[in-house]
Each structure stands twice: as C-alpha cells, then as structure tokens.
Length: 229
Image (cartoon, one colour):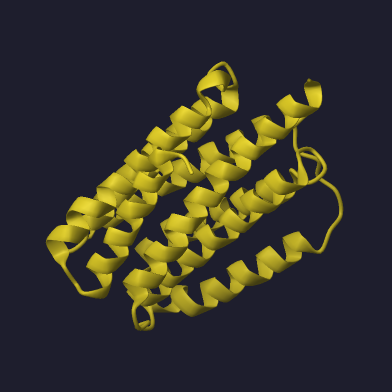
C-alpha cells in the first residue's frame, strides 16, 4: 500500500477515536488533515496524469471539501459557519460532477433509461420529509438546493456506466452513495432527530466515500492506460 495512503487512514483512525471518546482537541487536529492527506495521495497517484482535466477538478473538489470540513468545526460558535461549510461542499459536489464527466472514455455521460434516478428521487423526498418540517423557511431553501446538487452528483456517477471501467464505475457510485448517507445523518441529527454516535457515523461514511471516489476515478485512468498499451 502507498505510504501516503497509510497516512490518510492513520488520520482517519485518529479522527474516529477522537469522536468516539469526545477528545475535542484531537478532533480539531485530525479533521483538517483528512483532505490534505487524501490530496497528497491523489497527487502522487495522478502524477503522470496532470494534463488530464479531471485531475484538476478532483483537486478542486478535495480543496473545497477541506474548506467545508474546517467551517463545520466552528458551527458551535455561529450558525453562519454551517452555511459556509454547506456552500463549500455544494461547490465540491458540482466540481465532482465535472470530474465524473471528464473521467470517461468519450468525455461525456451516457444518459439512458433506468430505475436508479427514481430511487434517488424517492430518497431525496424522504430526506425532505424527515428534515424540512423541523427547520425555518430561510434554511429550507439552501438545504433544498444542496439536496438537488447532491442528487445530481450521484446521478452523474451513475451515468458513467459503460463510459469507464466497471471497477471505476462501481467505486465512484458507492462513494457517492456513502457521501449522501453521511450528509443525511448530519442533516437528520442536526435538524430533526438525535442519532446515537452520529459524529462517528457521519465521519466514517464520509472518509470512506472520499476514498472510494478518488480511487474510483484513478482506476478509470489506470485501466484505460493498460488497454492502450
């Protein structure tokens, strides 16, 4: 295993330990290091692909995820930090959509009939039912916008099917799904119902989600290069 990947998982384990035992200072140190360590790993693995547009998009998405992580650390000080974090992750999802599109054989998504979009829509409606009645109307609008972008993010991952390797497709879709689950736990716990060990659940799914998305996109290029030889 790549040593830089070891660093990511070591930081991840420290973060989970910090949340489990409520060690705030350790949490404040480990959380900002997550995306930095993943970004270092990604740059190392994509070193020969720097000219590929999707590499720049993934870099940008991880950078905005890092900003979002930091902003959400300070939500206890002022609610505006939550909106700042939400905005950063919204931008990250938009950039991930662009990365998904670029990381295909023909630089485009193949949109065709499937049941999956309806499953995603049903899930988003369920989340709206579980959260929106409990928040002020001012907060509802940004939450709905975020939910729509999140929906588009996983649909973009789904529509890479047939436009990339099976491994790349599966890893990215699974990562996108875990990202949605992570955000869903966060939203429910924050706005409507208390979820036991929510911090651990949110960060565990988030950590794995980011890793799956990054490695899924890397697998697309690896397989493509091998086929070209």
